[in-house]
Structure formats: structure tokens, C-alpha cells
Length: 370
Image (cartoon, rainbow, N blue to C red):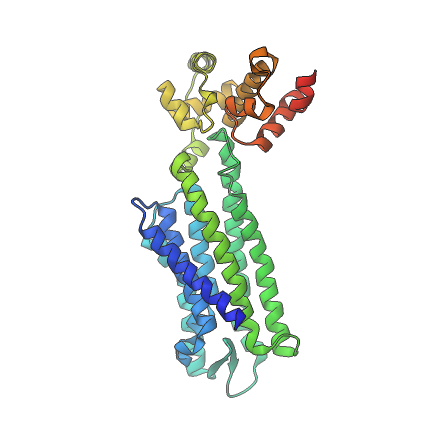
């Protein structure tokens, strides 16, 4: 009863989150992909708790829902990282395998040998054909792992691009999502171990296997809902990487001549010294280019090619110099080091300490004493 209650709470949380997302004044693409993933996840939990709701012929649709769930999770990942638009074509594309897999199950059950389901696990009713059954269920192990790898690669690409566009990364680096995705591999390994133990031994009760899976899946659902809603607020304030901008950056050619590059870099350095835009903790490449009235591509190219650095290092070097200046200033003697860091544009203690150590070779405390 406890397992069923936890799994059922996952269904309730999923629909509460969906209602909350629909109540927003303005939804972004990632919100809609999250809604679709939540619907699939809730359907999966319903199937694990109430498999009798599907007829014998439709049981494969419930059995294959984890594959569809991972496809929808992948769409959510690339939407929250690179802001891809919400399109039904994408949903259909990543549902093709799910539909084809179920059609294959139905065809085999109709023309080869009838397949039944016991506690959500398939088996051949008329005769024992473990080899054929293993071949049919093998994609359930492989396809989700492929999607997990794709999610991980998308996140790695996103995190690699962030320093080119933002001066503060801690709130938008999506490390929480990377940890969840990596742990999904452990989940799938655990699920197949449980199925193997439950079907071949008495260590795990056969009828409890997918109840336990449902509880674990509910835990993942709780985590993704919590962090997604919190991350949505941050992205609403700071914006996201645009896939078109990323592609343009990767494909752009050197359009600045030497004189043009020197002119823009001198204008940039003067602007940083006089206007001190780095004091804004949410300063981004787009925001700075708007303040200077030049294109983001031109500004990015100047920082990368003329100044031989990236936006993140460029801006935070100014923040470190501002901190050092204030640490030497008697007027700031009553301020804590962290207070001075926040006054200088940093919004994270750990980020400040890390960058300060990299730039000066000392901790902030050691620098102040010296």
C-alpha cells in the first residue's frame, strides 16, 4: 500500500504541475515539452498501478511508455538548453519508434504466437520462447540509453557554449539536470536487474517489480518538476541560448578586418572602464551588445579574436579588479569580502572564490591580508 501511495502521489504532482504551467501568463517552448513529458510520465505511472485498464492487445502500449517518456525528456532537454520551438512534428518524430514497436508487438501476437502480460511483463502464452522474447524486449533497454546519451551530449554542448554568452553561470548551467540524466542509466540497469531477479528468483516479489519502479520514477518526477519550475524563473529573467545564434556563431566567418577589430575592441575597453556594466550580475553578451549598440556577433568576435578570451572570463576579470580595488580602499574596510564581491557584480560565493584564485593565485582572504 505504501508503494502504491507514493506512485499515486507522483501522478497527482504531475497533474498539479501541468495545471500550474497552463496557468502561466506566457509559456515558453520548454514549458510545453515539459507538459508532454509529464503527461507521458503520469500515464506510465497509471499503467504500473492499474495495468488492467488496458486490454491484452493494448498492453504493449503501456509496456513501451518508458521509451516514449525518454524521447519526450530529450525534447525537453534541447528546448530548455537551446530554446527549440514547440512543434508537433518533433513530437511525432520522437514517437515513431514507440508506435512502430507497439505495432510489431501486435503483429507478432496476431500472426506468430500470442503474447500475454503478467504484472506488466510480456510472455508467450502458448509456448516458452525466451530467445524471441529477449529479442523483442531488447530495444526497451537500448533505446532509452541512446536518448540518455543524446541528452547528456546536448547538455555538454550547452555548458560549453555558456561562457561565450553569459558572465554568471551557476544558476543556468543545468548541472542538476545532468546529474538526473546520468543517474537514469543507473535506474535502467536497476530496473532490468529487478526484472531478472523477480522473474528468475524469489528475492524480489514478482508482483512488486513495477510497483518499485513506479516509486523510483515518481522520485525522478518530483526532482524534475521542482528543479524545472525553479529553473524556469531563472531563465525567464536571464534568457536562454538561441539555437540560431549558436549555429550562426559556429558557422560565421571572420568579417572584421584589422582596423575594424581594433576600433570595436577600443570602444569595448573604454565602455567597460567608464560605464562599468560588469557590476550588473546578470550581464550577458546580448545585454552588453545592446548597451553598446553593436551586434552580438561583432562583439563576440571582438572578444574572441581581438582580445583572445571569452565573454565569461572577460567580464569576470573586470569584477576581480573591482574587488581588489575595493579591498585596498579604506572606505570598504567594514564590508565583508563576500559583500564586496556582490557589490562588484558576482552573485555566487563559490564562483567568486574560484575565479579570484584563478586570477590572482590567492584566496580573497590571503589577498586582503597581503
